[in-house]
Length: 194
Image (cartoon, rainbow, N blue to C red; front, side, top):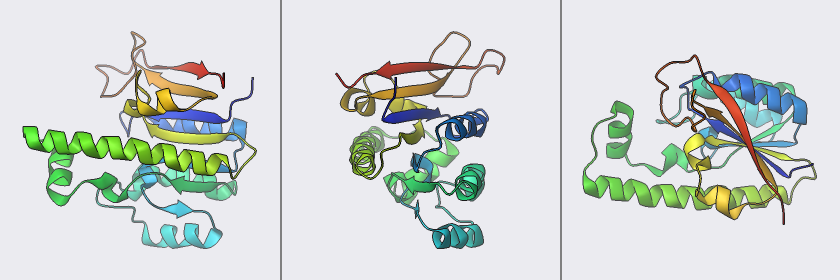
């Protein structure tokens, strides 16, 4: 069966995410790859790729090295790489520092993050729908595994997709560092257009 969307769950570095991303991108050969970690950066021309290779700067929340392999792959294969998130994921300086340092959040800060997360997910959907209209090939969409959890907005709102996500040894969606790397594997879930 052909799917219009291929979601790939990312652990944001808990495991070597790029290995699976490369495998899927090479097998599908999409026109566009949409990715959360590029935030609001769109690399849809050779000039934009060159500019980013020169600056090597994504944002205060995402380092260039986090996405360098993916950027190089898409550049070499002439695939347009599109960020589908907010700059710094929509977090202000205080939240950025607390998140990076994994400091406890106040109730008010947690509520603020929850609102930002909801806005981000709605933005992901809007961008995906926009790019579905621009191509006849399947879209590859790379987002944090958390956005692909059961009941997540993307999972509920989108149709005709395959989700490929990393799991721990018990088959649970990997959204935090695993206790060990022994049992990590990928699972697939599909949803038809009907």
